[in-house]
Amino acid sequence: MARDPDDRTLELARRYRQPRGVEQFGIEAVPPELRTVRWYDISLIILNIVVNPGNVLVAGLAVAAGLSFWAALLAVAAGTSIGLGAYLVMATLGVDHGLPGEVALRMPFGVHGAKIGPSALRVVASIYWFAFQTIAGSLGITAALRILTGHDIPLLPVSLAFAALQMLVALVGYDSLKKLSRYAFPVKITLTVLFLVLLMTHREPGFAVDEALSWNTGGLSWPLLALWINSVASGWLSMITDASNWCRYSRSRADMWIGTASAVLVGTVLVSALGAYAAAATRGQQGNAFDVVAAMASGKPVVLTLLIVFIVLDNWTVNVLNLYTGGMAVSNIAPKIGRFWSTLAVSVFGVALVLVPDLVNGYTEYMSVLGTVFAPLAGVLVADYLYLRRCRIDVPALYDASRRYRYWGGVNWLAIGWVVAGFAGTNLLPAAAVPNLVGMVVTALGYAVSAKALAGRSGVFATALDPVVPATATAVARQPVQ
Image 1: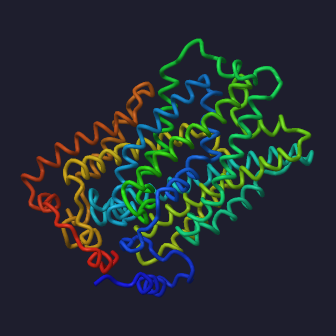
Image 2 (image 1 turned 135 degrees about the vertical axis):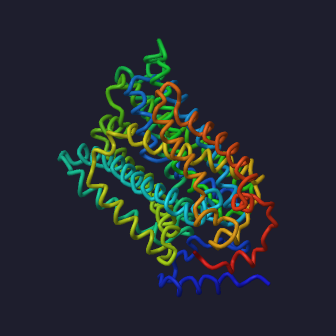
Image 3 (image 1 turned 135 degrees about the horizontal axis):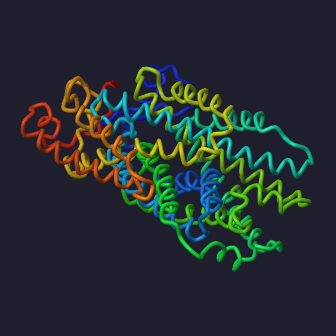
């Protein structure tokens, strides 16, 4: 007999001493009766991830680096496609079992291995992305305020205030994320289209549609294009554990697939077009679309005010997700803390990193580092779940260090070894090789072959790969947290 979800919620609130009214489920599997979220709410959450100042800035920076409008869109589309495959695999684990991504990674890396490896990396990535998005948004806000008021507004206090505002929703949890996404979506999409139209109808040289779209189309540098494909792929690969977190309250796989696909398509086209068009219209001299819109809106307080509203909403909706997932990763590392307190800890470090505004200038370097770690990690995950286990997972064993996912002392050293080897190998590849794609594929193949061979010689590894009998929802809900 299934437990009352309200009883489970109260139990978790008492166990972790978390405030009432916030999401209580952290690394625990969400019971089936609470998995009711439809495709449109999934779509709104993912759209609010994709439509953000950071992604607008990425497309603009790609054009400023030398790509044309069309080449920048091609780089974004290709990079997104590379990372989206691994992302959807992890999302399926959330839909089917109600698992957060950090716990699902215990399957290939071991009950303890997932804590010291993937979860630690997710914490670092979440804190970086939070700071990057906050600084990128604050740059747009200060640009608009400078023109609106005629005074230079210091970046630091704006960034800190902005960061503190975003902490609030993340601390409350999933339900607040869902509600915020619903309210913010129509405003964000409307304003994105509005700013794009303003750019296209601006009367200065270079802003006309035919001029902006035809600028710098004479030749295409593959190494430069590959560099930006790799950078965009890094962003998606660094979010693979997040996919399960967003979808573990989903009603079905169909809801997840429809919601995610529609959101990625619409959101990527809009933000990339906005960022790339602004940069192309300025002949690559300005990579920040918010600066361009703010400059051309001089003397138009309504437009400048709308720009500030757009940036605040845009940044708020995506950055609370960074804090939320970072908190989930900390919960996996230290299960006794609880989701609320873990999220608070990540928020403090994220706000502290906002004090380093140069993060925006080093985007490709930071993304290259993150990508070379998450690409082989994604390769191991895909090979393990799709090929070795045929999409079957023993959920109760994920919460019990004495069962099949114990490997050697709770760590699958074969998986860890392939991630390390993949990281090293990926770093040796030139940018023109699209290292993250190559690293992910080679690591997946290498791990799959070596794991099959090891299973024939190691009883420990053979046990981990034994066929799985599906667990009941009640058994999952009652598993102790480890």
